[in-house]
Image 1 (cartoon, one colour):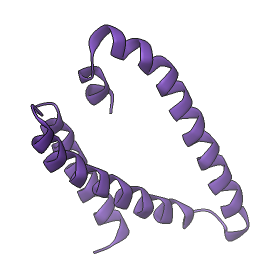
Image 2: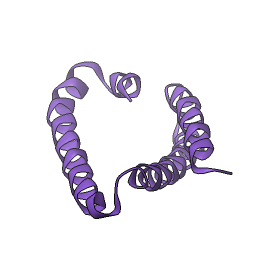
Image 3: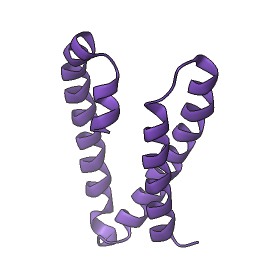
Image 4: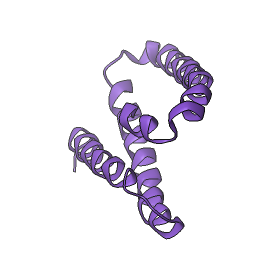
Length: 99
């Protein structure tokens, strides 16, 4: 299976799992949906990083990785800072819609 196909298939799987996550009612269901979602997300990220790093010249790959890391950290910080207030007001479901 090619990287592009894998990224697209894993994105579809994540969309399905996120839809199921919205219907989680107990711990067993959370484990049954959350664990596969975690593994698919990690595999998708690795494949996407490999695919995207191949489209830049080799001399710029280090800069791409650094920029990607900074963007991920900044995005997580922003999401977490806003997320505390959203969770307190509306609960967990808005996060599932955003992702």
